[in-house]
Length: 388
Image (cartoon, rainbow, N blue to C red; front, top):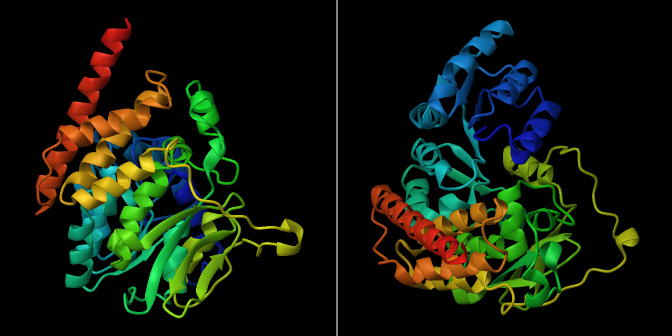
């Protein structure tokens, strides 16, 4: 479980704990939250625990010993990647946010694991590289994001046959700013952006939902996961978050997957596929819900969606540039250094300035990531200076 102390980690461990005869959490990781990781080790008794920040290793080691746990302590990204690829697990749930999750995700794919992917940045940053590794090493990739898991289910776990599938339709809740105009969003706060009406998520992904960048990243992800051209991937706003995505077939039929907005459903699907097990989530009560509505997204107000389509069209390292610039801009917004509408402006400026290269290997992609972060940070510094 890569990213055990986050919201997806909590959901995954809840499902795992419901089926002790079937699943064991053998490796748990966290970035820096040692105390939370030790608490999880007390409950789930993994063989290994990893803290990504090396300076926290002694705290983890000593805390595990003080708790009387046999769990072995590890530290650093290299240890994380080694355990993801090692013999102590056959399934890896990749839920580390951002580019930081790339190396361990690739390591799991190259080791031929069942990879439950909840880190969309790995696909946005290095979709071609990751999918090549999955194919070459016979790994099994099951997307855990609700939208892509819905498409996975509608396609029965197979790649999209372009002769039989017309479109993939990703649904978006619209986030907390649905139907708001630019004038209202000019003064939007981080607290408002993180107040998602349907999903309980971390702050960064909540802001991505509010800007529709989350949906843009999912468009790129769907292209790589299912081999679908960008022009055949559409987005519809569906405020109820009950229909998680749809697949339109050549005969005009549309298959949709429905469920409550709870990540335990998709995690249970990924852990047990092709079987079904109890996730702890009840089916939606459609009679009580009453109506399900859909509308096109407001691309003029929420410009991040089109920026993602542009990065997909540019190809190569453009996805890495998009993702990095977005991470920098969202962090600045959450810290109160820029406004909500500045987020797409920072990303657009960084994309325009980048020299997009073929994405030949991880080093090239990480260099593009670093260059984008530097450019976006410099732009923010200039903006702050101009406002001083």
